[in-house]
Length: 368
Ligand code: HEM
Image 1: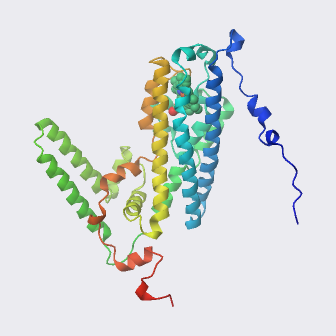
Image 2: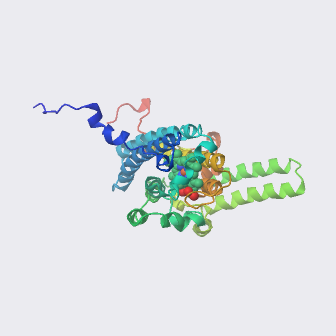
Image 3: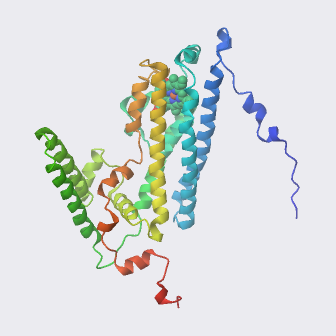
């Protein structure tokens, strides 16, 4: 039976009355309206709308990871939604240029009327950070309590209860750690892999030694190689790995890290392809968010120089430091240290290949 669908009017459906009456500059209260305050308000509002959409996608992704089993259909949805987030992030990064059309002098015409409001109070942005997995103890010292102190009680309680829930990072870690691993009897993947990585590191060391560096530089370069060796060995040694975690050098659990490495190395295998797309999209999301942080920090330096922010931070300096400190999926980047070229990878035994693929060789004929 046809549904009785009521006619819709464009402006009513989109609540344009509400949306378009929500730009109310403060400068007229104190004299003439500062022309650029409208731009300042609209750019922030547009960002908040995109934050809303990104959170909508991330909450759905979060729910998928919380299912008792995450099958290929679920994983497809996760990858699809992450792609959408990445596209929005590109837009958000490009949009920094719009606010940069305002000069510092134009900004100064109304900046004083905004105190003490601050981007610190963007609850959606803070929710985004928390849902991804940026916990309080991982923030730079100034940020551990500072922004919470600038929130009203309602917002503070909301974010504090979010901090108690598993983040996307936690869920991804668990998902990777429970990946069925290649338990085929004569398959000693990690042994072969370890010696292949050792060889690659030996080769790096030989190149450094052949380079005739000055003594001091040679020592630094060799220390770098040694640190790579230590980190790599730690991947296979529970205690050493725990130490890396305690030192803040890795965040993923050991099992999750090994799974991520395995999936990345064998991403063409049909059983791993979607998982690899998810890992790559999470890494890209981290990268694009870092780019946004950096562009915002540069824009702030241009607007304020070394002045402090309206939220009381050191302004540019604080924001610049968050670009490195606030990264959540950094392990997916450092993992690249141990990747091998396809040609150096241990050959997977046939029964493993068959377990990973959805195909049969033409010579085998149709399944019986
Ligand atoms: C003239 C333009 C802008 C200036 C001068 C500016 C300045 C600042 C400063 C100084 C901070 C550090 C906190 C503080 O002390 O207040 C900050 C944080 C922040 N701003 Fe902006 N901002 C501008 C535009 C924007 C825009 C367009 C957005 C988009 C939503 C935005 C979002 C944020 C967010 C989310 C934070 C918190 C970042 C964090 O804690 O890591 N800002 N901003």
